[in-house]
Picture (cartoon, rainbow, N blue to C red):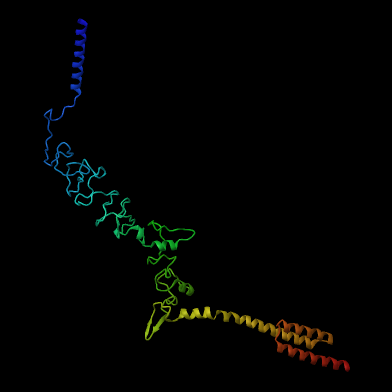
Amino acid sequence: MRQWLLKVVILLSLFIILQAFEDIHQPISLEQQNIHFADDDSDGYDADDQCPNVAGNSTRDRVGCLDTDGDGYSDEDEFWNLSDGADAFPLHSEAWSDLDGDGYTDQPNLLFTDDCPTRYGKSRQVLFGCSDMDLDWIPDVIDSDIDGDGISNELELASSNALYQYNPMDANSYPEDTDYDMIPDAVDDDDDNDGWPDLVEQDRGTDPLNSENNPFNNFFGTTTGTFYYGGFEFGEEYDAEAVEISLSGLLEVVTEELIIPLLLIPIYFYFFYSRRRLFEQLKKDIDLSPHHDKLNELEKKINRDIEDRKIKTHHGLILRNRIEERENEIRGSEEE
């Protein structure tokens, strides 16, 4: 009997201990503890309010914080910035994020929507928020002068050669432009911008890189030419279609158009006098020939010289007649 009572007492003790342990670990609700959160900022949020001291209606990034434009994203403050998810455009209810931080929104179909949302850029012509290296508001993808050095991308590439390649995306890499007309000297027809094409100046002996030197003022330190444009119009401005009246033009005609005929004159005289000398020498040899064998040799030589054009044909006829006369003279001498 005592053993049974002892067992009952032990079981009751264990039950009481277990019940007390469960009561200790049982969560007690705020209502059971008679504890309540106050909505101090009167914004309708109490326990979930992440800005309990500031009235706000944000719900997207934070709850109960200031949301000026009412788009659900809270305004940035000292504890919450754009990287945390704050509103990048707190005064525009349709825009709230700017992934690349260039001031243009990621949200579509707005007047300031970023056309390049993942790349920082300040372009504002045609495309917004795209790369604009020279800050001229024109996006690089359609900018004719990406680096803003004054020389177009196309002309920089056209001026490049095997020794040096100009970079249209580097403002410090640009070809020489003597006259600053934004056309590199390598592709500029008039490097000094004096109106005269470089090729014409080079032909006339003037400096194509000096705007103060041109074919009209290259002689005597004064203007020595003019252009006739038609009617009663004259002037000094170069015009390939106009009639040029100048000392420089005259010299060019003489040196370029007449130079070959002038060079041929001494050559002509050389051949003329060399033939004449050969003719006179053969005539002398004929007159001094002592016998017929010598005359026969001279006749053969004359025939060869005619074929080789060393003497003229009519000279050859004269010499043959002279040989006949000499043969008659020798024959007459022999008969005597």
